[in-house]
Length: 375
Picture 1: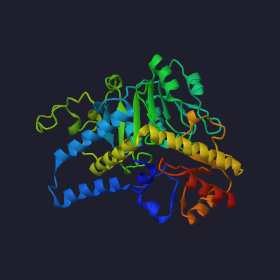
Picture 2 (picture 1 turned 45 degrees about the horizontal axis):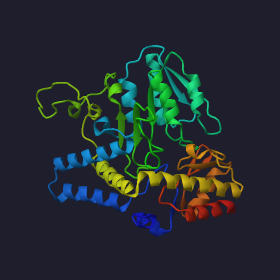
Picture 3 (picture 1 turned 90 degrees about the horizontal axis):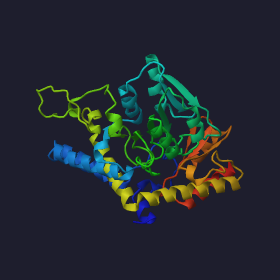
Picture 4 (picture 1 turned 60 degrees about the vertical axis):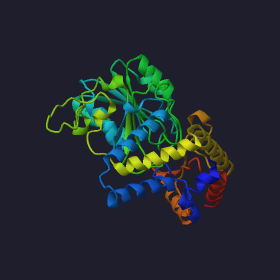
C-alpha cells in the first residue's frame, strides 16, 4: 500500500482541509469507520451480545500491540485514558516516606498529577529543568539519588515535540533498580518503541492521537517483574483468575497485565484500534517513522527559510517526532488565521503546534509555510 492509497482512506482530505493536529485528536480513517459501523450494526440488529467475537478482536489487538512494542500480549491491558493508566501504577506501588520520583518541568499534566497525588504519602517529586523545550537524558540521570524510586517521562514532549532518549534513561534505571515509566501518547503510532531494548517497565498510552483511534480508550504495558512488586489498588471481576465462577468470590488476581483490566472495556475503542493498527502495520511501522521524521525535518528547514524559528531547530533526527512548534506572541491570531484557511493546528502555552502524520505530504507542508509567511 502506497501513500496515495493510504490518503484515499481519510475522507477529510476530500474537503481540502490540511489537518496538522494529530498531537490533539486524529481523524478517523475508512477502515476505522467500517470497524465501528460493523460493531454498532452487530449490537443493534445482529447477535447483539457477541462476546466471543469481541474477545477474538481484543486478543488480536493485543497481539498487534505486542508485536509493535516487542513484548507479549499478556503484558498489555486496556484502560480508558493515559492518566488513569498512570494512576494504576502510582496507586499500586508500595511507597514509603522519603521515596522520590523524577519528572520534568514541561510534562503534560497527565504524567504529573498522578504522582503529585502521592505527596500525601510522603513521596517527594524532583523536577528536572528543561532547556528550550528539550529534556536531556543526562540531566535526568544526574538528578538520580539513593531515594529515587521511579522516573517518568513522555516519549515525546507535547509542546516542543522533543523525543526523549528512552534507551539511555532506561538502561540507567535498570542498572540502579529504578522503575521506568513512559507516557507514550505523543509518540506511539508515529514512532517505534522497543520495550526490551529501551528497558521500559511501564507504558501508558491513549489511542486517539498518532495511533488514529478513539478518545476514551488506552492501553498499558507492564513487565512481569514490575507487576509482581505491585499491590493493585483496584480489583474487579475480570481481573481475577476464575472470573466466570461468579459466586465463588475468590480474589486471586491474574498474573498477566489483565489483572488491571478490572471490568468492561470500551469495545468500540478496541475495534477502532484493531483497524488502525492493521492499516499502519500494512504500510509498515518502520516506514511510518521514516516518513514522519522526513516530514518534520523538511518542515523545520522550510520554516527556518521563512524566518520562523522552530523550537527544535538544530535538533538531531534522533530527537525529532511528528510535532513541530514555534513560539509567538501572536500564537492565537496565527491559529485563527490558519483555521480560516482550512488548516488545523493547535495553540498551547503561547506555542503554535503543527503535527502532520505519515500520510501528510510535503506539498501540504509547503502550503502551510506559505500561509505562515503571509501572516
